[in-house]
Length: 319
Image 1 (spheres, rainbow, N blue to C red):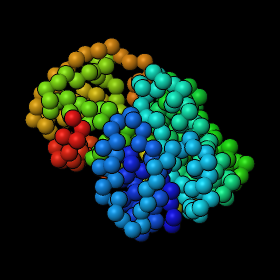
Image 2: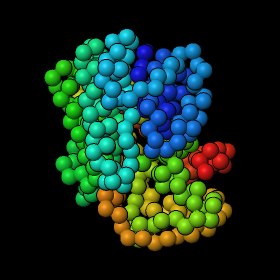
Image 3: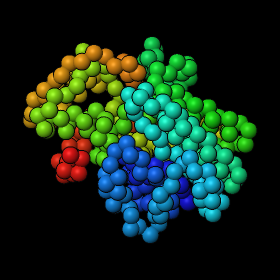
């Protein structure tokens, strides 16, 4: 297949590109090298595939409608995998307009270009953040999600709604995948496992918001990539799927695991709870199991070992 990946130079995008190329697909990846973290890190992410004959990279912004129109008119993509987005709950509260411009307008630009060029298949990267502080756990795709508690979450719910509109009006086949706290080699430097590892490694205090009882459904990158591949093979109309491990780890437990595996004690800086943060994320993956054949394999102990191997090899790049 000929596949377009938006956000190819990011954490998830670069892993997905490698897997699809290894499976024999042709991949055209686009990225605008958003300044949220250094371009040098993103270029390193692409190092393994940059010279592959079935890979092409184009520096492009998903909000640039004429450029996207030209790209889609010139390439008969079998599927668009839309990973590009402004990421992060807390930063979204500081600059909500930029988040909506990129995540909502950018998604609309892609969908409109697909419509005009008769490309009808998309996978949209959504987020567990759409569930907000859902009282029912684990979170199921059928749960009510009209109470997001951050601008980032609202942009992801808006993206899902746009995908539904284009599926309904123009017969697009779209799977919206709600990712649950993805981690592993190449994880963004601002995310908890990477950030805490770096702070422990440099004897710098770790900011602990609240009492450490907040819990996340940490999902290893290879399981997420498996879920995306499964989703590609089951596109029919509009569907939403959770992709998680369906297990939770508290913040206190995560710090203890990192202390044990790094052999260093964390210096904790206890702070008040942050607005926009959810208490728990916990995926009900029964729908993805039944319909996609999604079976996550990697627990937190294995995943952190793999992350630490990568971190110690490349940590100077992230200093």
